[in-house]
Image (cartoon, rainbow, N blue to C red; front, side):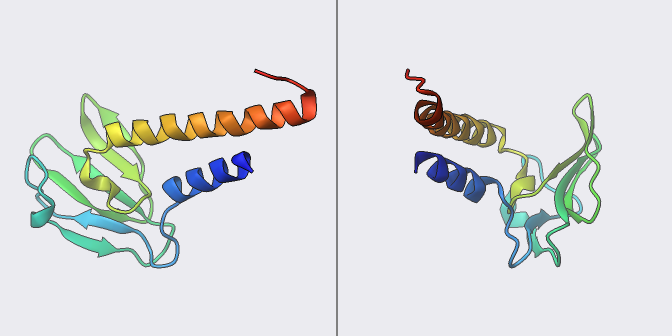
Length: 122
């Protein structure tokens, strides 16, 4: 049961919104630091699109595109993501926290499986 709940929790965090499309911030010349009030929210037409943030050193652009190729050189480049409003660019701490929590929950579920099938106990 714990394993199922762990997978369910991870799926609800990481899977994009497939029914209504993906929501992305969109602005041609975005403010620095990013202020979501000055951006519009675009809802994509398909689940295959990705949100992006393009940093050129002179300006920052955000939006959605069909094929997003992530590049990064000295802090400049394109960043791609696939969750609602993920292209705000300030989510690395939150994403790291999600990864740590998901890993912890999966490890608890896997320990239960090991105990059940292998007789392994912690």
